[in-house]
Length: 308
Picture 1 (cartoon, one colour):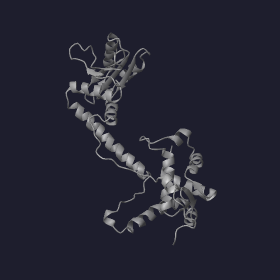
Picture 2 (picture 1 turned 60 degrees about the vertical axis):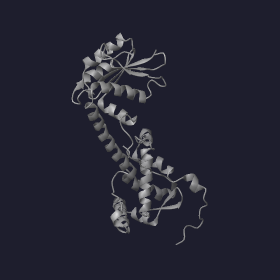
Picture 3 (picture 1 turned 180 degrees about the horizontal axis):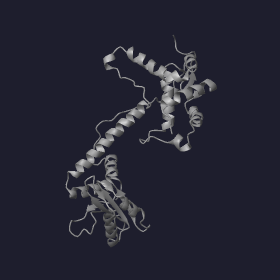
Picture 4 (picture 1 turned 90 degrees about the horizontal axis):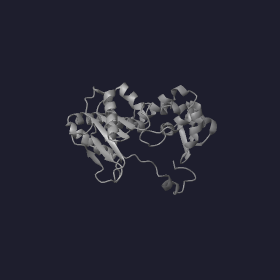
């Protein structure tokens, strides 16, 4: 399990005490060995794709200790342990509490206390707290999407899923690649996506706007597979606002290679709608900036350090 940033602090401080000065990237391998992390854990990334989790937590662990005065930075990108850090390392169990108290003092000393932002000592980094908040907002929107779909007519749901698949790239550059089939004699097919101009490749769609508590069972899946056979199609997507029963999932998994059947339940449907911007719009954008290494590296360093 990848350690939290506050669990990384003491091992990182001890590492500096032994090694002297280290660059950020030089912490990763010895700390991974210390925590017994696998290669997959070391390289695991945030869901957002914004970097590796373990590396980011090391960075924040060092940042917190640096702000508390436990580290020194002889030059940009290089960390060392300060005299205070060496002293605090004698009682490692008190390091995290010391950092928390130092931040509390800094907050109290800010001149504009009414507008200050409190810094809580949690096991999440500020960036992870941001991701966690975004995740909660996203999950709330997922439910809102399903609730809204259930308030619309079934025919509109069929139009929606065809639009979604087109937004996901199915149909490519083909004009009018997607269509909802007529109600009469639809043969159990609710929509069709043309994959090429001449229509040789087609994806057939079944859309069931069910209440969230009502499962889609094996009989519905079998019926859809039968409709695919009649349509001489080997590609099908079954989309529902609810969920699939165990029997339905087992049947779909047991199909032979001649038929490709994708099942999309309500939770996955909401995720796709959100990800591909169908029925949602950007409400707010938060920019997080980092230092421009090339910019600062182009500026000459001070040889003797800052003036006192």
